[in-house]
Image (cartoon, rainbow, N blue to C red; front, side):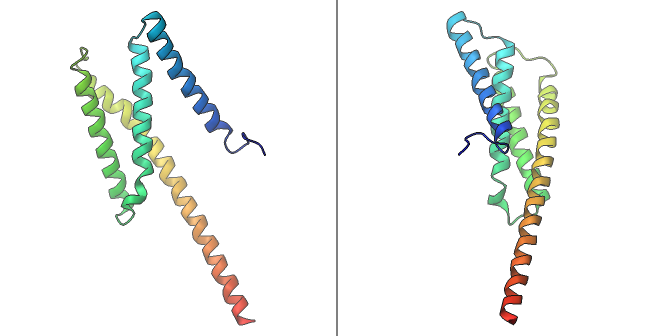
Length: 146
């Protein structure tokens, strides 16, 4: 049995890279006392990636609602979290005058692309499952006729 195969190769690389990057940031902060904007930005991207993935993964809880409404609600929750994070960060460091607009753009563009890819692949997966169910029903119907 292979632990790493074609299906999980890229996710495995991404997980290892993330662990190494966060480890590097932590080691530098502890051993060298070095924690600057680059490290903060990397950890912010990790946090926002985690939040975006978490919220997208919860779409099934709202499956009774139209997909467009679910997508808009998810985005609204996330953009509020991003703005809250920016506001809280402003209490610990000086923010650029365009910080809120920069965070809005920096989050919206990648999240929009990721959400679109996610929902398209989800749609394709549902279509494939529906096709399989249809085939099974036809096979059962053919068996019952015999």
